[in-house]
Image 1: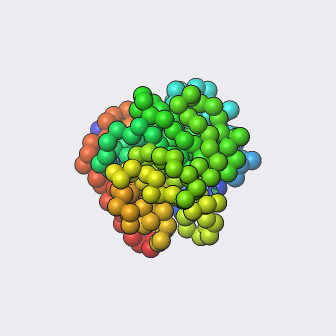
Image 2: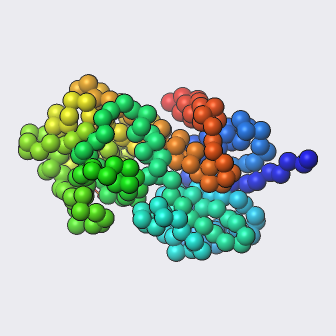
Image 3: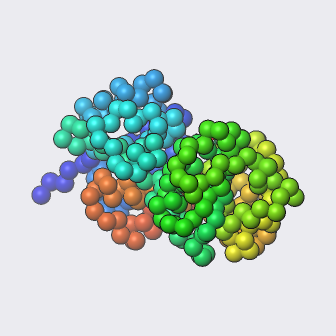
Length: 283
Ligand code: ATR
């Protein structure tokens, strides 16, 4: 039987740094598939024509990255529950002439969190209020029924009222030496602080000592920055993780949607290794 080759892409602007092609092509090779996955730069103003063009060209799926995740929703024929709740899509599927939007970032985050040992969190502190933070807050609220979240932003007025379990906070809330407030069992950096080439810092020095002693600290930025949040947290004995694990799992869940099958651990391992090799080459 002739094996068919499907085409996938990640679209964004910028997008050349994306590790998604390497991760997904490693998965296809592992699964014995002839599919291809490429990165294509699409500026904001061309999103609608790019989506229609991808549909016309017969692509099977797309991943969306900055700046398209939120704006793409208006071009979808149907939207999955997670994408609707988050207000953004990262995984697009073309099928029977229709465009469907999903969001695997929240589930991807939870799968990454579960790789770090720790108790069920009762209180979490989330830094930053962009699209990634919205997906992570949604993932956490869905996964942990009792969890209370302090959602910290430089502009707390813009934090959406997604649940009575979420409280919008300013940065004084997390400032070292300023308060005795318990920051809980989980701290997640969803800001662009620590991104390669970005010299910005948090508006305050973070009071990491107000986290539980067994707390987990996740920075969705990757690669991990020297002397940054994760180094500081690790020095305090906290368990830490950078953004590569979430990148991996959101990709695994996207593949499951596109291929309509469970991605086995051996393939996940291949994808993880491909990411590690690519990051190693970059450093
Ligand atoms: P993404 O889609 O990856 O979440 P984004 O929407 O640009 O990207 O969000 C990045 C977040 O980084 C912004 O929401 C911003 O948060 P707030 O302005 O709400 O605090 C946050 N951010 C960027 N630079 C920051 C800095 N120096 N200190 C604190 N937060 C910062």
